[in-house]
Image (cartoon, rainbow, N blue to C red; front, side, top):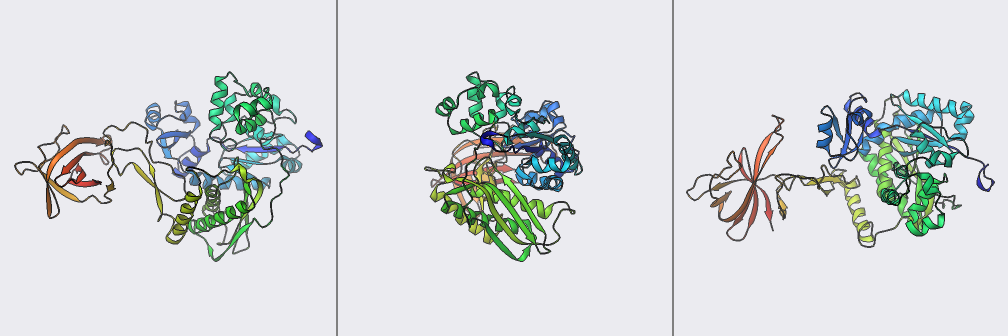
Length: 524
């Protein structure tokens, strides 16, 4: 028995180490033992064990990682890929022990009571789950403990924590373990961990020894949740809030849906409707059941558990991931007919105060209305028809913008804060040409101006001709030469950019390539 006489409800966690790297290897068709690094914004966010052995660490820039491990296979971060390839693992665990909840791709949890009753003991259940996951070609570790967060940390150490032994298991762990699992901790948890370390709190046991009142008054709400986790208690204490009626949303698909993009649009529409009902009921969702029915009567269902209340974007992401995994998974697990019914059902809700809207920026009312309008247009025109720009790293104006579809993660293709030798200085052009038109630039004697091998102008620009019109050049800045991909003969190219001021006040950004000068941008 546990507190207040409630029966113990132990938790089993199944963790697949380095899942983004494992998924990237599977997508590329290479062995998982290959040194692999997954990068986002030009920094390593995940890597394989063989890559770590070669010196690659999370947070390092891509070039540094490749320098430490020349044979490193680099893949871009792709949450859709990770979720799609994780579905066979979830299905394997669910086949052996129903009731699986997905925390994130690479990590699932389930109640221990049923699986232990079926297999006889926690040790036998853990061995069986490892075997089931291995049957789909993936390695995993299993942990069992009284509370969810303790079980997740136990899975990272392949430990079975005895009943009531959570605090003793957690006490010697470093304080950094409070933020190691993104499915259980908000991003700002890393700042709390850094502050505690600077204050001399180095272990979870030392943090647990602090009084609750001191933690709440000094550090805030997230620290209270972390403190409960360090003490071996559930981060969210039981709340007797029942799920209000009439929150479930569903959509009948006629004709049946077989394409992922079409199903994702329906899922996004349902996510909007669900959050409208949640807001009206003054609650927010922390556990979501995504279910579907096919034309042949097959029933598909999966529960997603989240550390924080779901936003409309977070709900739409999880629906898209789940549908992608169902419709494009292994042929043995794929439904035999299209989806005829899609349903979203909140399983656990909290007070809506846990999900704050922005006051200046963030998810304010105006931003929310604009986003809903974009989603409606996207539903009419297609997923890639409506995109938003994300500031990225690069040398030219076209390279510094990454366009991503509305609703997807705003991840730049490269780190905007990294050094970019040869980068064009501010200000940026007000208009960038999608297809740069050709022009000619002549000097004082009518000779064409080019770029020399030393990256300098061959003459003084005096006249610019664009189509049938010509202007006098009254000033210029540059050139800024760029020698890119010199190590790859097929991709290598030399360019140089020049800012020119024409008579009449017009300013242009022009670029010199192998085929001559072109207009890349126009300044306002």
